[in-house]
Length: 253
Image 1 (tube, rainbow, N blue to C red):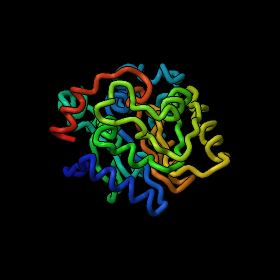
Image 2 (spheres, rainbow, N blue to C red):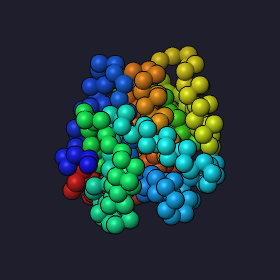
Image 3 (cartoon, rainbow, N blue to C red):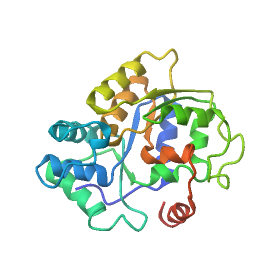
Image 4 (tube, rainbow, N blue to C red):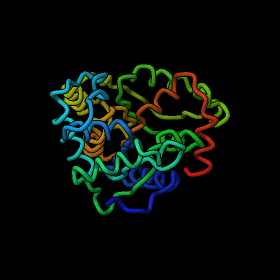
């Protein structure tokens, strides 16, 4: 079973900061309903649909699930549904936990167990901005161009002005790698990352069910932390209403 103790956002950020300071690999992944659906479907239970938007066919599901299952035990920070109203609903946290048990997936003993919503909670109290300050940032996601433009704009995220003032993004440099669909897209992204003209200090990743595999590989490639932001990327460049999420953060983040 996964450890009962789960780390709050502050402890997760400390682990990431230590990795930056000591130039050590550190991979953070957040799992929820998508990973759960994939793992169940790959065993023949339920319909395969979550990954279709990523260019995967139903025939690919076993290979993608096996890749995910192999990567989770290598991750340094594994985040599971905990806070917010959906976490304890049967189809969210419990379903994911039983999918992991069905596959016999366990984190490594020294892994930190966090909250799946940490990718959103990093937007509050300047957690993410402080990690990025004066650092070279690599962005790997299907929205790379939009995210890079937003970061280079040096303005508070739309809808997050109350949590991040002007000029908060004081990173040294940022470059993006557009993550294309399917398994081939993962291999292409890793190849591009290996040929960067400069060494990144931190990577922001959005890759769906491929995130665990890519996070581990990218973290090892440059001895840096890789943070899976997933759908939280949209907060950086699109209108959002974080009020409710902010309350969840204050109550259980």
